[in-house]
Image (tube, rainbow, N blue to C red; front, side):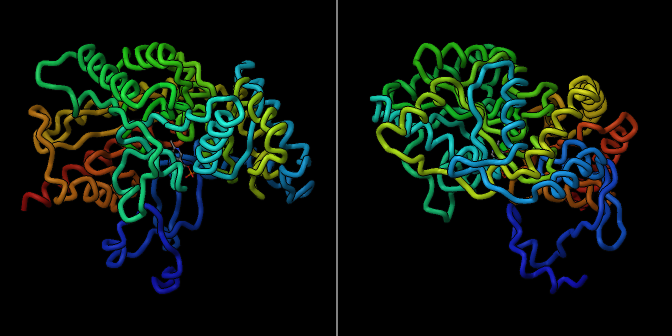
Length: 449
Ligand code: PMP
């Protein structure tokens, strides 16, 4: 395949200045946690595609479910009072698996669509429920919630806004939770948490809680740098949101479906969200699907809106696609039958113990692990918490060196993110970490020359 043949593709989340000089990586096939490019080179994909291929790249039961579903009903939509049997069964199974906390499921085809939809449902609920002022959404610095206009507005990452005339004016921005980078010298973890929760409180009060529709938050921020919250953070935030009467929407597009060792990430932190957005891992990436699990209030609000607005003016052709629904049902079965949550607990320990060894490299400031998510924070001086000059692109170099060694990781600035398939075993974790160590050493040595 020539480079020229790839020019028609617009690559997302890609630095097109670099991309002009370097050929894209074009993958032809997958096997377990490995993928092979069109030239026959093999890579461990320690990002599971884009945080989504949770069962690797050759899971026969998912392929069989998709094949059977294609034979049965290859296309249908979830609209106009009609849908496929697979879609209804999936909705029922999701609600049951969530332990009865939610009442209905809205299906889209992606995470962005799920987030965009929940924003519209929140506004619809306010408009029909006598609280039309409730329009603001509380969102955190470094958050990522998708790329459509509303979802991208929520982002706390400047490049999601720059050049796009965003954000739209409906957010209350509050601090991210990143103890290592953001704590003041001498500040304990508890003091740090108390400070950022206090700031969050002040910002919501300044905006007026009566104007706030919800807070949308990832239980663990993924694209913002795999930011693992200190133990006290979510309990304090849950108390604050209850006090100010702000519902929580848990954006589980990355954290859901086993990634944090539970069906949903909010369960790991004991949260009680009013709605949950999911995508990616719902089908382990084998078919596009997004969904919003709606609690009693939002479910009732959508039903009530019919009396004031008539037809629900929201939906999408591919939402709840029958093949995607069948794949998601097979995925739920696999998660249950193969005890994926237990495997994730083992994976977390493996990642934690092996990544900790990287801390003896002077440029590694912190490693973070939770479930099957991990990050390595690269710093010019890890102990003094002195970052690299971003212009030096250390993270990008490490990712390139890793790729040269057959390892795919994600550089988020100078944070290296890992999100390996949940089936990654002990020897594979060792291989990932040893390749990553070699990549870091090579990138720093190369830079020093
Ligand atoms: N929310 C979160 C937390 C995400 O990480 C992402 C994607 N990385 C999205 C929403 C958007 O999902 P999609 O790419 O499927 O639109």
